[in-house]
Length: 230
Image 1 (tube, rainbow, N blue to C red):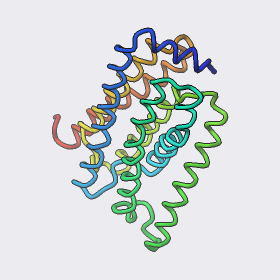
Image 2: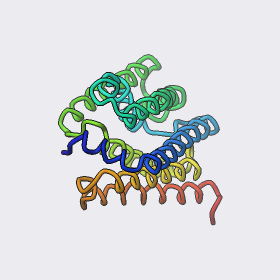
Image 3: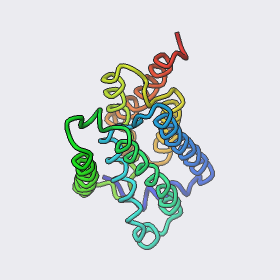
C-alpha cells in the first residue's frame, strides 16, 4: 500500500506541526474515552457497543505488542510515541468492556446466566483479536496509518445504531461525540498533509466524510436527546 519509511521521513519535514496535530488528536481521544466512562457510570449503561470496544482493543493492543518493530526495526519517534500513546487507550478499552460486563447483560443477553454472559464477553474479545490479526495481515498497512481512522469509523456506525435502538442518549453525551469528531478532524488533517497521495483518494475522503460527519451528527443528536438543544 505504501513505503513505511517514506511516510516516516515525510513527518520529519515539519515535526512541530505534525506533533501539534498528533497531540491535539490524542487529547481529544483521551477526552472522548474519559467522557464515555463518565457517561456510562452516570447512566449505569455501557457507552460503546461491545463490537466497537473489542475491535478497538484488538487494534490498539496489537500495536503495543509490536513494540519491538517500532523501537527495533523502524526506530522512529512517530511510531515510538504512538506506542506510548496507545498503552493508556488499551486500558480505557478494557474499561469499556468492563462497562459492558457491569451494565449490559439485560440489554445484550437477558435470557442467559451471569456465567454464560461472562463467556460471551470473553469469546467476543478473543474473536476480536483473531479477526483483527487476520485483517491486519491482509491490509498492507504496516505502521497503522489507515487503521487508526478506519477502526474509528466503527464508533460512528455502531454509535448511530445503538442510539437508534435505545431511542435515547443513555450512556452518551454531546461532549463524548464532540471530542470524537475533533479527534478525527485533527488526525485526518495530519494524514492529508503528511502522508501523500495514497491517503488522498476518493475512498479515503469518503471514509473521512462519513466518520467526521457521523461524529458531528451524533454530537447534535445526543445533545437534542439530552435536552441541550431544542
